[in-house]
Length: 160
Image (cartoon, rainbow, N blue to C red; front, side):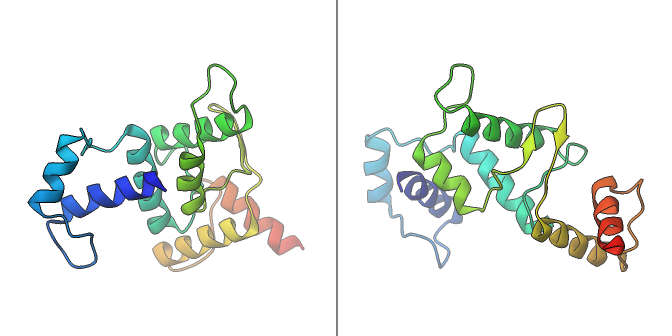
């Protein structure tokens, strides 16, 4: 997609010619400059990059409000925009933006609003959270005051 191509160009220029990146010589940079290529990513692209980093760190994209309020709100706005596509007052979500989010396996199913999050998180997401918890703490005895949702998930699994 065009989004992916532009992202690749920006990443390649920032890489300074490292292996694994597109080769961008001065001629290519000059051509891109001549057509007004914007070397700075859009706020949307920056948020997608933040989500990628979050996923690498946590194994999922279930951003909690207490971890990153801005990213949490971005995720909720994205879900609302998809649900209310084309309606005034919602973020514009074109096919390229949707493809970019699908490319990082963004979970569209979470039923969240900005101030109240009622999440029906998949088993796989909770398992990834539990794995990350174990790596950090060395055990899986999750306390309620540490992560209420994960605590409730563990109790539910134990009861079944």
